[in-house]
Length: 248
View 1 (cartoon, one colour):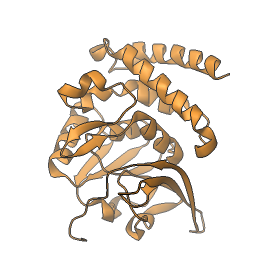
View 2 (cartoon, one colour):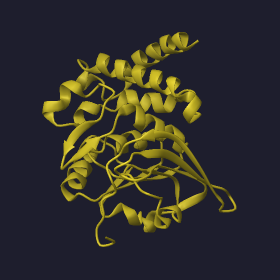
View 3 (cartoon, helix red, strand yellow):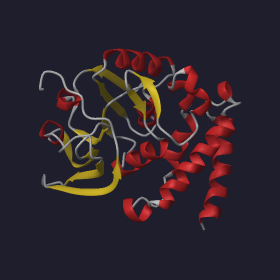
View 4 (cartoon, rainbow, N blue to C red):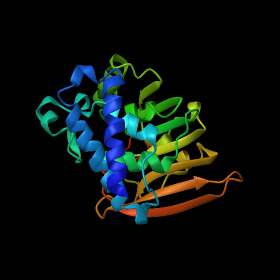
């Protein structure tokens, strides 16, 4: 069944590669992006019992296919851009593994009219993925050069429903909330109340929860319509620790 799904997926990706606006500019790398998306799908299938995510929906597959990951990594790492691995982006930060980006995005259950908060813009790759799924994305990055370069890159590439802010993500972005979905990409011992309070009732927050030196559990926090929080730890992950500003 999985093989049949992947054959169908390859046909879908081929169609997308011929119709999406970014495909022509990097057509020599398109086959590698096909392989990356197929590998992500395989990894999603392999962990479905632990995560509850059976497959990726068409919109997320289309976003992974469209967004050119190589444009978000330094030149020296571009040959590795379509491996399903994390890569350095400078300032001791990484661009996350595509599988984890896809998994966290799927777990957040983003809808087309949703407003999304992202902590840890980095180079902006995940931000670009989110922009293709949501009405608006608000992304916060504490490292000023990364925030500036990501904002410029995303603007130049036409991801115009994204706002990037240089700030301490611990505090979220209260003025733009509440959010339908929140994705936290730095390790936290527990999810700060400052963030949970900005999650809309009915929304979902995804974060790596645990001590930085011991690994974390990728955790989904659902806020019910009555405001009750339901926390579900899923799989072990390892993210860089939450960086702080004035709160430390």
